[in-house]
Each structure stands twice: as C-alpha cells, then as structure tokens.
Image (cartoon, rainbow, N blue to C red; front, side):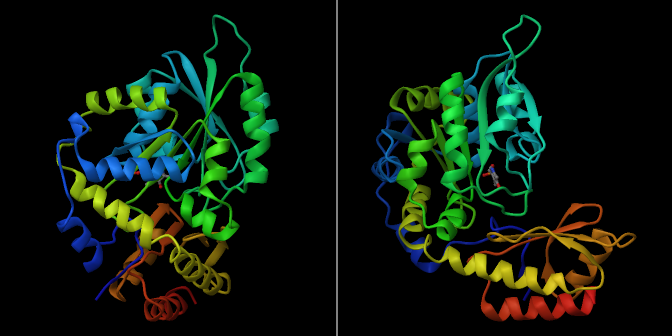
Length: 340
Ligand SMILES: *Cc1c(COP(=O)(O)O)cnc(C)c1O
C-alpha cells in the first residue's frame, strides 16, 4: 500500500463519518431548508463568535467570495506573495472581482503590520485603492508556518485605523490553533471574515465555511449562487463537516508531530539543501542542485511513498489522519535511503 503524503486533501471519510453522512437529515439548501447545513453554519458562526456563516463546496470559493464582497473593481488586495489567493486560485481575484494584487515579501508566508502600512496606496486616480488584507494561517507555501494572535493584533489595529478589511484564509487554521492553544472565538474577534476548510486536515470529503457579519454573509449567498455553488441536499456533506469539527480537531496534534519527525530526518540528509521550519503538518524542503524534485519523487514512489513537487528542486510532504506512526517510520527509512 502506498503512503500518500501528497496533501491532507487525500483523506477518505472514516466509517464513523460515513455513518454520520448516511443518517443526515437533508432538504434544499438554496431555500435554506437543509437542517444539517443550517446546523453546521450555526455551529461555525458560534465557534468564531460571529453572527453568520455559509457552507461552500471549496476553500477557493470561500476566499473568492470574500474578496468579491469586500472589494469593488479597481481595488487591490494586500497579501504575501506566497498566498493561496494569489498562487492557486486560477487568478480568480482578477476574473471574479476585477482587483489587483499588492504582493509583499514576508517571512515564510507571514507579513507584518509595518510592511502592510508601507504598502497601502495613497488615493490617486491612477492607483488602485487598497481595500483588503488577506492573511493565510497556516501558510501552505510558507511550509505550514503560523501566526499567533499577538502577531495578528497589530495588523488588525492597522486595518481598522486605515479602513481596510481583514480576511483570514484559514484552510488549515486548526493545525495552528492546536499548537498555540488559542481559541477560535479570539480568532473571530481579529478578522472581518474567516474561511476554514473541512476537507483538509479535518478529513471531510468536501466543503469549506465562510464566517462573518450578517450582511457580509447575506451578500456571500448571492455570490455563491452566481458562482454555481448553491447546492441542494448537501446536508450529506455538511454532516461530514459537523462530524469533523466534533471529532477531528484534537487529533491534528498527531499530524503536526508526524511532520516534525519527517523534518528532523530530512535535516541530516546529504542531498537536502534546507528544510523550511516545520511548524504544523507541512514539510517543504529544497534539494541540493542538480538533484531535481522529479527524479527524487520517482525514487520515493518506487519505494511506496507519494509526495509532490513544489518547485524544480523543492518537495512537499503533508501529513493527515490516514497516516499512522508505522507509515512515518517507513517514510523516515525511505528518506534515509533516497536522500542519504
Ligand atoms: C486548500 C487551500 C485552500 C482552498 O482550496 P480548495 O481546494 O479550493 O478547497 C485555500 N487556502 C489554502 C491555504 C489552502 O491550502
């Protein structure tokens, strides 16, 4: 059997999650009459101490809707150059919202208030209007780095002072919170809107949630519909999300610890140039040139381990709930064989 460390999106529902899905009570959510979706949305809103939430098919959609509701065409979004909203959403910020990106060079995907302040544009006819800041926590391309609320607070204060909205791409937020011990309610107080993914480390097959103020979510519902995201009896999927929030949050510590073990093994390998600091469930490392990700990944694959290329000489491993301690041991052995 292959050990799949390509992404934490590869997980399949556990038997218990499937049981919860099978027994879900459903209705037509476009008419707001799916009781399981209503329960999930209420649960998410309460979790972050916000008035409302909306269930969407993907984290790309929740982020794209957030950008759409927070901006007007010719505005700009300020974020780190590694951000998912810039890198991996098909350029949707331009297509869906007609906005520009003002990209900052952070540290492992994390930016600070001074950088943002320097990037806010003055109001001239010939400049886009700085309107929205997006933070990513944890930061995927930053190697799973995370912000603490102490680091977010100055950014929150700056945005309030300068009239900018602050959105959190929290696809893997719970992998950060399990490390910091901070609460979702406290996170809610720092952001205008929050996106979380149920289909990453939490192990649901499909789904993300966008959480925010009542009027924000009312508009989000319209944009979800026009993007084709108005689902009908999707309570079967929401049931998986409820199960995930109830049962799969605490165990994320295991995934983070597994990633650290992989990171430690890589640190001492002859062919490894450097490992980005391992903070959560993602491990990104660079190979010494001329070794390429492609050839090394083939060697891993023939030994039963799947990972992904994150650049010509860069490889990513992601841990998740289907990865056992025995699989981590096997991975460590194979890393030793392939990378010396
Ligand atoms: C996975 C991910 C998303 C959303 O991706 P979907 O595949 O569209 O659900 C958003 N942001 C980050 C940081 C992610 O890793």
